[in-house]
Length: 440
Image (tube, rainbow, N blue to C red; front, side, top):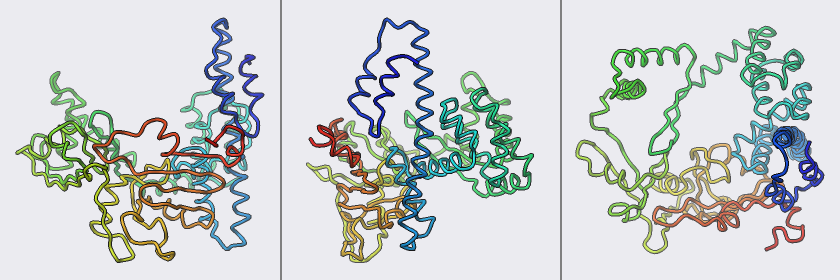
């Protein structure tokens, strides 16, 4: 291990000193030869993996302490686990769903898979390797999972990720074929189709299917492509066009029957200010205009304009307790995705920021979009959400995170300093007491 890496490791205490890390990151001795550089690269990778093992132990410790507080209060174990998963996500700056997966991984590695735990702590496997091993053995009993862990111990750190994953799957099936079969049946019940944005105004339409169905679909599309593809219309395009035609019942050249919600300033109609499409994101102004005026398309457009001068969207208010109708649609268009920091899940619930039982109004300013799990987590007594639609703050476990809705189209994006100080303001409680940190 190089001297420079030893220096930074010695500065890893209970709190990482950001100044030391920044200085280490910026310093690279050009006199070090290639072998030393590669040795330090390997050491950094192993240190990163070892820190993942430490994070797993910390996550389990947090869960145990939260359980000790929640059990006397009669809080359900599932609610405690969901709350801790969100806390882990906030600490690691990732989505709450990912936090729960990391918490489950932490328990499995630290409590049931000692060889995997030791390999991760030694830095010879990655957190992703450990995740795959836990996933492939999740359907097994604790004893069988330990048996798989022992069987693959000799491969840890010496084979590829894919081979390690396949070996764990094979051993799991040998030990308990019935459990693996039952797991496959459950997986088939979770088949679904998802849509995600891709660069250059494209989308990724993904189907999670049983293997026989997925292979059959691909074979059918391939057969058409093999018969009709040309240099001008290559194989990939033929398969994509055939998929659209068979799913929608129309040729790609036919008119598209779509409903488009556009959040846009007037400049989108005449200039270059982008518009926003729910479930996708921003699109160029020229594409929005094309959708509106193309005579070959039957497009129903609902426009939400930003308020002149401020860029704020026009608000609404109702006297009822629940968010329904146009007010719910408005908040979905405003927030775009779940407002919990680092969560980009689709909005499933529209709920009050200040609870209705505490006098909170059912208004646009007191309403916020949440995914299902984040809306449940905010009901935990140790998880606090405050503020209004302009700025909400999550406080939990000594962590603070502030979020804003996305800037309406037509306003310039926030500056880097604004993002660092306001948009996602993560502060460790004990950092705020450190001289010169978090006090400006």
